[in-house]
Image 1 (cartoon, helix red, strand yellow):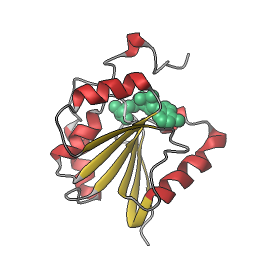
Image 2 (cartoon, rainbow, N blue to C red; image 1 turned 60 degrees about the horizontal axis):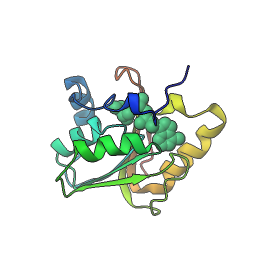
Image 3 (cartoon, rainbow, N blue to C red; image 1 turned 90 degrees about the horizontal axis):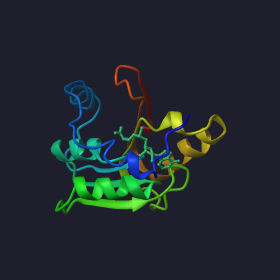
Image 4 (cartoon, protein in one colour; image 1 turned 90 degrees about the vertical axis):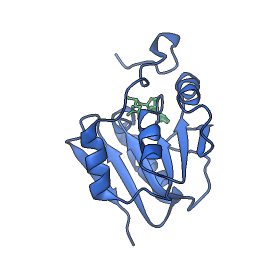
Length: 151
Ligand SMILES: C[S@@+](CC[C@H](N)C(=O)[O-])C[C@H]1O[C@@H](n2cnc3c(N)ncnc32)[C@H](O)[C@@H]1O
């Protein structure tokens, strides 16, 4: 049965732990995060948003369609001035064109139906600046799908 991300009982499901060292190692190989603007789409409670901040990003925009997850991310990132939190759908985030250096989606793709995936990818491409990078991770970081949209 699919998880209801808006359910109160799922509060704090995606908080309270740090990203794995394997994740930090992978990101370091892929990209230089310092001074980058990042959209973390399907951010959940913000575990990876916080990890990006630790890596020195300039600004992170946390997007999720669940109010419950956004309440968690607000709690988790309280007091951080370079975090923006916005309710939005991965298919239509409402963020401006060409506004991000990196679009990051971890453990989101399996929640997007096959028929909606092209729209999801097109939305990420719309958000990226020239030379930006689209990173899609399945929950198991070892099975990385990466779409690089380098010009
Ligand atoms: C498995 S959780 C992953 C959370 C976080 N990325 C992580 O890795 O810890 C999936 C998240 O994607 C969100 N989500 C699912 N479908 C979405 C959609 N179409 N648009 C925005 N968020 C979505 C859910 O609300 C949930 O917070």
